[in-house]
Image 1 (cartoon, rainbow, N blue to C red):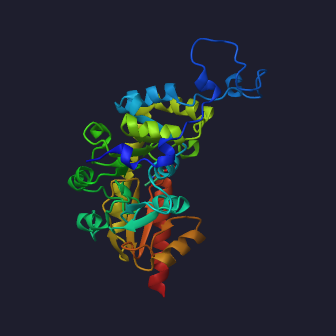
Image 2 (spheres, helix red, strand yellow):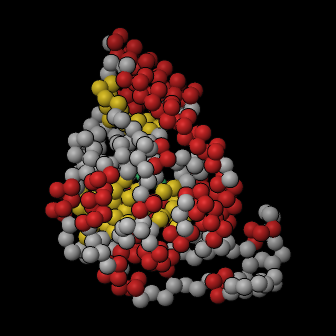
Image 3 (cartoon, rainbow, N blue to C red):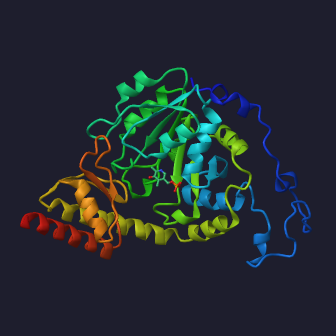
Length: 354
Ligand SMILES: *Cc1c(COP(=O)(O)O)cnc(C)c1O
């Protein structure tokens, strides 16, 4: 049985959270002399002289509306990367606890573990890039606090089987963190509506990919009220700045535009996959549920370097286990995709001429 109280670090359990000026006062007032701000204003619009809402209430209400999830189940981080780090700091005792990751996957789970001195156990994905449940099971012990599941997975692009994820959720007594950074591009449905069924579930999403707002640094964690209480105790009081809160609110008014972009990107992804498959040195274009393609190509490293000379940057994954000879290609604009395909044709001509 999952018991949250048993997995929270002792020092965090007994932690008294910092109480900011804007926390201590709640009510009606119009003379704010409590936070040592510059009361005269700033060179920018006038409200930027004030500390932002530490609980981001207005923004969470908007997200709640768009996602169909109650505000109490939403936590906001300075990018998903902050949410990842906070999960370690809340639940993993440095030098003692461990987590499980399923490589090849997003690099931050391991980097953040190393920063926090938490051991990483690896259950590599199967050759079809699905979870190896039997292997995961053998790695779990009393000190295993988090299992990281990235779906759709980066860099492979595929969604993980829902039944497998449910198996982990049902049988693991620690936190199951499902990173859905690419969910907007996927056929698969999100796990955010399943919070009531799984007290150990944390779903991560982000404004960095489909929403097109990587520069704002805004990530979301969806979980039980109890899990989020713990994250809220540990987060920096003003982790989401006012400019980000304002701009994200504005963006959330444009759901239609974002949905149109998602459709266009998925369409271009499928078209680009078709074109890449025609290239004789491409042996595989993996099915993608994300806004990128993983492509197995002869001499991947050299292709990567040739494209660099053309001013085109891909992600070289050729020395990543299970991704041998692979490059990861983010879907660009129609024009950028054409530039890429033309450069690949040029590369091929050079090879044939040799
Ligand atoms: C890009 C990406 C993120 C996004 O992180 P942010 O800090 O929100 O920009 C998270 N997880 C995965 C798997 C990603 O690929």
